[in-house]
View 1: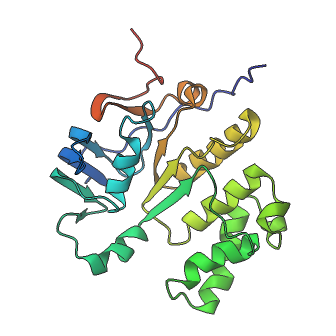
View 2: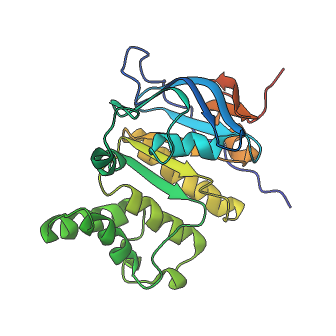
Amino acid sequence: MTTTLPRPTAAPATASTLAEPVISMVDVGVTYPNGKVALADVSVAIAPGEYVFLVGASGAGKTTFIRLLIRDQLPTSGRVVVAGKDLLKLRRGQVPKLRRRIGIVFQDFRLLPNKTAYENVAFALEVTGASSATVRRRVPQLLNLVGLHEHDHHLPTQLSGGEQQRVAIARALVHDPAILIADEPTGNLDPVTSWEIIQLLIQINELGTTVLMATHNQEIVNAMRRRVLALEHGTLVRDEAGAAYEREY
C-alpha cells in the first residue's frame, strides 16, 4: 500500500541571488583514470539557506558531485567553491577545517555501535579538540533539537532506524555547519519515518542551514516542490525551482 506524504507548507523564498553562493561549480568535469566521465561541464550556484534536491539514476554522477563538495575528489576541469573556499587552491591541512563547515548524513547512519547516542554525538566534537564544557553544553542541545533527549544513553541497537538517523543528523550538526549534505537519508526508512526525517531537515533548513539532499524518493521530492538538480550520465540536465522529481511538460 502506498503511503501518501502530507504536503508541507509553502517553501520559503529562495535566498537572494545577490548573496554569495555557499556552493559554486563552474564548468566542472571529472574524468576517472579509466576514461569514465563522471561529470561533464556542470555549473551550478546554491545560495545560503536553500533546500535543494539532487536527483538522478544510479551512476548519474550524484556521488561524485557530493565527493567534490567535501574535497574527497578533485575536479579534472573547472572550479569548485564551497563556503567561500576554492577547493583546488585549498591546502591539504585546511581540508579538516572546511569539512567542519559541512555536515553529512548517510543512508546507513554510520553510528559507532558501541557508543550511546550521546557518545556518538560527543565523539564528533571530541576528535576536533572541543572542551569538556563545550561537549556537555552542545550535545544535549543537539539531541533535544532532533527529539532524542530521552534516548541519550541508548546504543544504536536500542534505537529504531529513524532514531538512529536522528542521532546521525545531530552528529552532523555539531560544528553548526553552513551546509548539510543528506545522501539518501530516507533510503532505509519506511514512508512515515521518512517524512518525520524530512520534517526535521526542513526545520534545520529554516534555522538557516543550506540543505542539499540526494535522493531517489520521488514522492518526497514531488511533495516538497523545492529546487531540483537532475543529473543524467554526468550532465546537469535540469536545474529547476519548485520542481517535481521528473520534468513536467
